[in-house]
Length: 288
Length: 288
Image 1 (cartoon, rainbow over the protein chains, first blue to last red):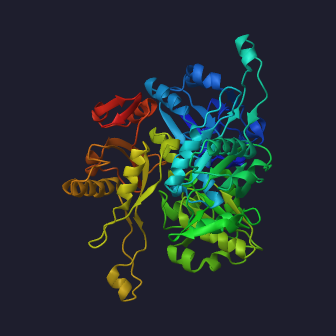
Image 2: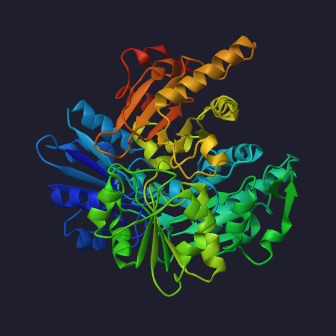
């Protein structure tokens, strides 16, 4: 059996009892280590599970998937994913390979940012499409996520922004020279994400574009969701540019139309005075 | 401390280790029993947790919340929710009451249908707003969810449809007579949901409306997600009208624009021939 097991968010104890039992019963246990990370890292997980973990980086999962699935029709193999196994899009490929090889598979679900984000008080069913923000480079500054956020806001919907993670990346120079030297891991912060968005807003304003999002738009910065030291910060986009929410992982939510109950919940984590600009229109509450 | 603990989907062992530890440490443990249900029910949970559970029906949660929170500033109280605590919208109110009463609270997350739906192979970030389908009555046949699905499809997005649950409901007659006699629980099936949608499609076609959704639209029926006997059925909306996916809970997904990887994943659970009408347009795959 090939088990895809979600580890949830937070720490080692966020695995489900069902997941832990499966981990203990498997002959090989892989830890997917490039789409997300857990506080404490591999060592904390190994100690809690009482099992050695094989780190599965992007290379192993995307280039050598057969190695992961080897013998899984006669022995049990576990593939651990922070959050839920289907939060990241890359794991469908593993499932398809298993099925094509005649290997039965089982998914053990857990919380992911896609549903845990509800703890900030915004209703999950009011979220539109999720977007991803990537680190800009000197030559590559994609903006498509901005337009998606505006479309969601036009429809009154909130937007969850997943923030870039760079783990085991080579510099352009080392890649060209074929040197397997890796850069230190980088995790995009809420402040960096907010800064990118403000830059886009300013550029588009200068071009005379009608803005679906401004520096004053109400946002929610999230850090280490599910961990004991999680932070939820409700502030304007501009305020978040200078925020420090501590270590990774971070996520950002751009609010859409707000229900009064959502306003009350956001108030619990809001910067002083930030909620005072809310206006009530058409029986619903909007952020100006 | 007031703990809101997600039980995940499936059975008693889907609770997280962190959640189980909290349950065992609390002096009172409530089980929310009206927005969702777990296979096996209360008894299976009590046996696995080694704790007696107090069933919290809608009345208790919405009318007598203070009773649940009583003494939670000096003792630990747990409130268990199938799925994730913030999957259902009603639990924000409990958090606000706790905060207003000076009671610290903690959320222990878990999988919910909102993220576990990814196991069917549709990418979570491609979902638009979630809709709810309610049981129609002779005099109340709301259709707003249909328009929301069409809007999502226009934007290429998939739609998760949450299906109605009626637990501990009084008949109109018993309610008027003030008799606390409750109807047997009802859980909307995928077939019932598909039938409602087909009725709306037919009515609107008769009125000459341009349809954003037809009997041939590709859908995914889901039953008992996360349980050992979960069912995923990929079929047209019309085909789902006559499907029998077994016991509760059911959910329905209306697909939007499909990525080739999504098509491959759906194929694993598809009715014979159902995928043959997929056409490739603009580099993406659409359902006609």
